[in-house]
Amino acid sequence: MLTKILLPHRFQKIGWIMILPFSVLLFAVNYLTFELSWLSISNSQPSADGLSGFFDPDKTNYSLEFALIGVFLALFLIAFSKEKQEDEYIQKLRLDSLLVAFYANTFILILGTLLFYGFGYLEFMGYNMFTIQIIFIARFKWILYQQRKSILAF
Image 1 (cartoon, one colour):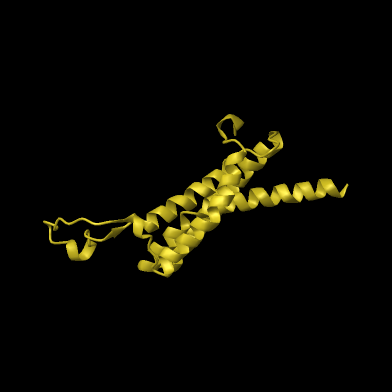
Image 2: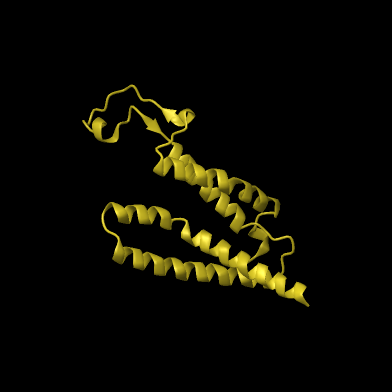
């Protein structure tokens, strides 16, 4: 993995700052029916196709989309920003962690397909969008932590 295409380290700090508020917002929007009023758009034109009762275009709120984009962006900034010291070992660790994340995501996807049906499967797939990035970050940071801890022990 070329370090030229990684973001500067300062973006990682921005990602860590962003992850908590956007995760809380995502939880609130999904489970507490919270909406940010400034993300509401009203359309006063009636629907010509008769689906206005189903899709309700008169009352559109983009809080969920805002929260999802925020979480995606935060995870992206955390995952693909350089470390303070970037070397060949870190590059190999990134690649290995990415492979483990893809393997785990494939396994979780197969397991979820066998276990969930209907709306539960749709909700499962919604959460599965984050698994590759979360597993990558968790494994990468854990191995880095273990490595630094073992170096300090000597």
